[in-house]
Image (cartoon, rainbow, N blue to C red):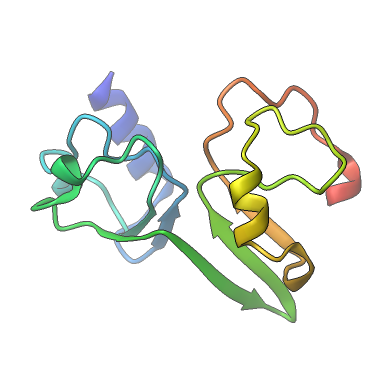
Length: 124
């Protein structure tokens, strides 16, 4: 499985690419896989990314990251953020208070797993 994942990654990512991974990347240790993966990788730390797996791995990591592209403001965060009054299947009200939603046009997140079943085309 790991060999196939590495081959799939490297078939798309070149050594010159910049990659931002939205978390849960270091679960179980990543040191042995990083040298095999193309790209300059920065990890947005996920809830399964343990200090013991990250330390000594050489990967760059941050809790979250903001960027702007062509005037559009983005936040990269591991956990999704839900608007007040909408269903939050993660019951993660703390994230909502930390991130001021009106400061961003898009929030890019990981963490979701099977919880989201519908993609809203209005987000395009």
